[in-house]
Image (cartoon, rainbow, N blue to C red; front, side, top):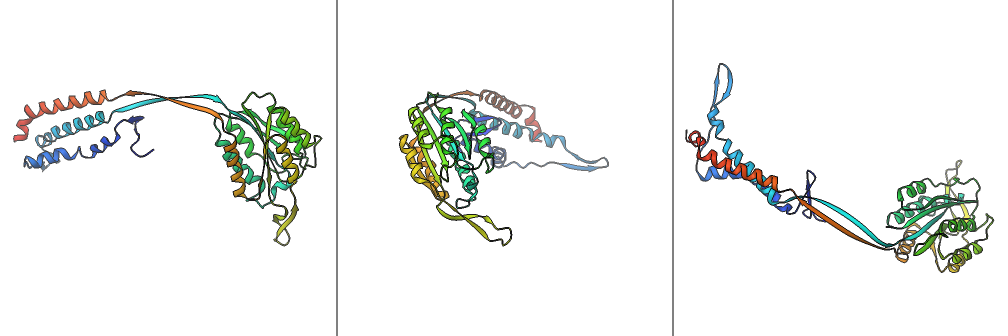
Length: 337
């Protein structure tokens, strides 16, 4: 939208905002008229015992130009057509139900994704949430256990608040309970009547906790019509993990993602596996999922406009006739003095 698509002033929108530029010329018109008439006007100022005083008859000479300027300004405003618009949006179609299942185990503090794996995942998950329209979203956090933090909702502010609160150590039991996380997501999605039910599972390790086998959980998800996108975070091998408090040197720890299992989980539900070894790759993953899971939401916009030019037009005409009257009556005597 460019500068002149809609101009807003005092709560109005203007149908022809370019005409408002003429307001800058209005004060110049009386001066131009005076120059064309070759009249020289002076304000006689007398300094007497009472102090500085202005000749009132000379001051009256300014009344007609002021009235004329007011008339022209009001007529310009009327021509620009001030309006107030009301917009109504109607959405039709069906959205998608999506549960984000995010690993918050201690290894998510590793720094191969910047600033950490968890911080990078939260930032891009936030962008993903803000890019959805009409979908219900939920949030599951897991480490050695899994908890549903946000039920399926269109209250994205609530979900984003809970997403921002995620941190390593949030769940006392450390580990990676991928099967339990999928099971928790299933509990949220199984009764959904959405056209598409999706779980996005982000983890950086191998399942080593929880009582539910990940592959069995994936089969249950498939039975409920839930598609699983698994996202493997981080690099394998030695990766940076803060600094040593004694030497100040960067510490390195060894980490490994169970990519084989993550692929199998996605394949069991007709989903896809993605690997994100850096921030750019993780951003591309979320963009790809956005393209794969599009909502069938159609938005219709209704716009009603109410014009408010009549008060400006009426006042402009009033001041125009007032100027004509002043010109042709007693003011003419004043101006001729």
